[in-house]
Every structure is written in structure tokens, then in C-alpha cells.
Image (spheres, rainbow, N blue to C red):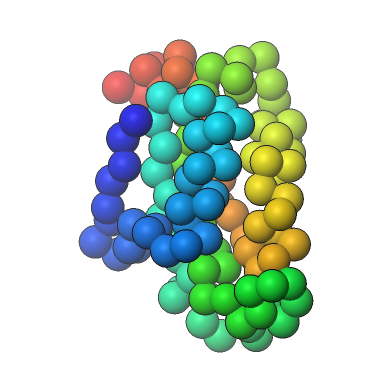
Length: 111
């Protein structure tokens, strides 16, 4: 599994990011997973006030996930699968995900 850092977007390493990473690994057994924290780009948003992590700063992530479980699944349903796997996080302050979801075959075709 590859994890990269981007000069413009810090690699996610906070408490929520670790939970998101663990949940995605458990649910999808990814061959590649990148989670970038883009929360600072959305600092103008009003802080989330619900759930056990009221005012949490880890609210926006960009996720690049490659999993064989996406084989034969369309884009909308892949996104639903990820949102279902992270339902707790959405209920406790996670606000948005920017998702890139591919199968290993789709990933290798890009190389």
C-alpha cells in the first residue's frame, strides 16, 4: 500500500485520519491508499457542532483508494460503499470526501 505526501496538501495523520485509514483498510483491503487532509482549505466553513468531536478540525479529506472490491461496481456505488464504511465519521464531524476509487486493473492501465 502506497501513502504519499503532497507539497500542497499534508498527509493525513490526525486521530480521525487514522480511524478513516483503519476503516478503509478493513473494508476494502486496498492495494493503494492515500489520504490527504484538505481541512485547512475549508477553514472558512463553520465548525461542525454535532457529535463527540464537536469543533473537530479534520473535516475534509481527499482519498485515493484502489481495491479489487470495486470490480464491476459503478462510480456512484463505489462512493456509496466508502460513505457506508465511514458512516460513524460523518456522524461525528467528517464533512466531505473527495474520492478517486479504482480497481487494480484501472490503476495499472494508467501506468
